[in-house]
Image 1 (cartoon, rainbow, N blue to C red):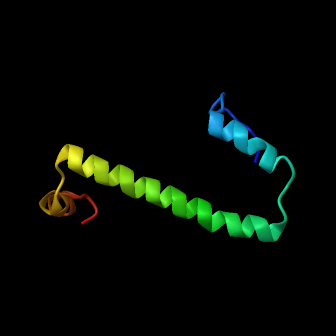
Image 2 (tube, rainbow, N blue to C red):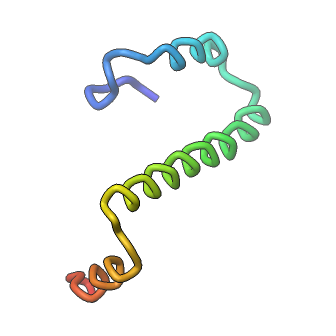
Length: 74
């Protein structure tokens, strides 16, 4: 991946700590093992963020049904 203007200019401490691990390309098999782990972690974070948002905004099943009823694609 090539750096571009959409990438943050600074890395956080955890990212900096990971750089030495990723300095050399990983063997393909190792990379394939890491991909699902990264996706699982990101999915967990998304689930937690959504749960926090639903609680904070008091979103419930009826809200979702109202969105479905009023959505322009329906």
